[in-house]
Each structure stands twice: as C-alpha cells, then as structure tokens.
Amino acid sequence: MDTATLTTADRFLEAFSAQRYADLADLMTPDARFRALLPPRTLDGGPELLIGCYGQWFGTGARVVSSGVEPAGEKVSVTYSVVVDDGNPRQAEQHLYLSLAGDRISAIDLICSGFHAVSAASAA
Figure (tube, helix red, strand yellow):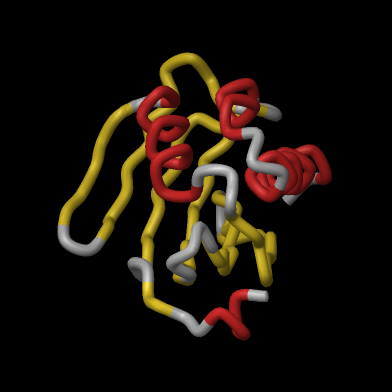
C-alpha cells in the first residue's frame, strides 16, 4: 500500500473528525459509490448521499473518541467510534472500506453499529 493511499484515508478521517462533511466529496471521484449497511436498512448512492447522511447522523455535535487507518488488501480500512451529544448522548462505531483510484476514493462500503445511548459522563 503506497503512502498516497494511506494519506487519502487520513485526509478522509481528518475531514470527518473536523465535521467538514462537504470536504469529503473533494476526496471522492465524481462517480464514487457510497454503500452503507445500517441497522435496519441499507443505502446506495454517491457522494451527495454520503454528505447528507453524515450531516444528519452526526451534525455539529460529534466527537471522534477513537479511530484508525489500515491497509486491507487492495482497500483501506477506516474505523472510528464517535459520540454525538446534542442533549441526548449516544455513540456509534463505523467501519469503512475505501476503494481508491489514484489519490481519490472511488467507493466506500460502510458498516455501522447503530447508535447506543451513553451516560453524560461517558460522553464528556
């Protein structure tokens, strides 16, 4: 796995952590595919769907509490655990597998744990 590949994944994680969801589209090819397995449904679309979902799921009150980037065969694995505290603290973990075309993301396959309530003390 080359450095550019891991750098793209790191930039994805950085934009997500900073809640700059629109910047995620800049890392993706125009025809990139976004697929998500969520409790209780699946989603399939492009960069616009990803940006809309991230804004809806995480808003501006999200805090990444752990994350990682690793090679996964020809893909890159990105994982993170995030706490959203908008008065109703909850946590979710997501695993993403990125397919790359050069230094741009051509596909994202996401698996989500779903949100689970956490105590206010845990969310701090």
